[in-house]
Amino acid sequence: MIYSVKGKLIHKEQGLAVVECGGVGYACRTTYSTLSQINSGEEVFLYTYMSVREDAVELFGFSRKQELACFKQLLSVSGVGPKAALSILSDTTPEQFAINVASGDYKLFTKTKGVGPKLAQRIVLELKDKISKEQLSVSGAASFAEAAASPADGNVGEAVSALVVLGYSTTEAVQAVSKLDSSLSAEELIRLALKSMVSKF
Image (tube, rainbow, N blue to C red):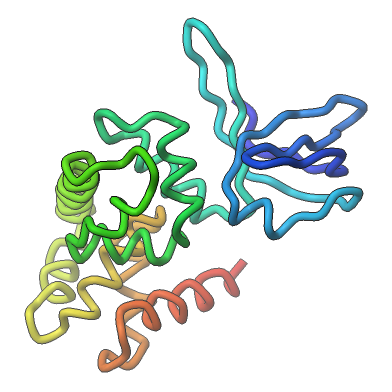
């Protein structure tokens, strides 16, 4: 499995970035968001996911870990393939994607070409259910998750669930969000929590 690629960006076009590493050009399928952050001729770093099927082997690359996490979450939904997942992530940010899943708002996904209401609802339902199970399976985190998701702290609960969608454990998410002002919007809580967690590394 190829975890990441780092090298010179020698070519880019819609949905594709080619990164040269050690004389080999790796063709990475990617999103509009990632393409907008990288420039031809410059050194780039992409987190990758390799898809192996009977008829094809493809590499997918993302400039942010959160985007890769959302991509993997989408692939776990029945009926969502790599192309659909890339299209969805090209139309939204990882933070907005996570918020919509956490809040159960599927309408954002119907704006993506090829994603109808039924598939959009399935994405939200399956991922929300998966998040709930993951939260309850984390040792010692169930009480945290329950408290964070209480009606009085709706935005806090949404932010915690959204951070889990982005690949963080429930414990990490709760600890980061609990240090913030609970009156902030869910999106602002996520942004500040991500900033605090990234600064630790």
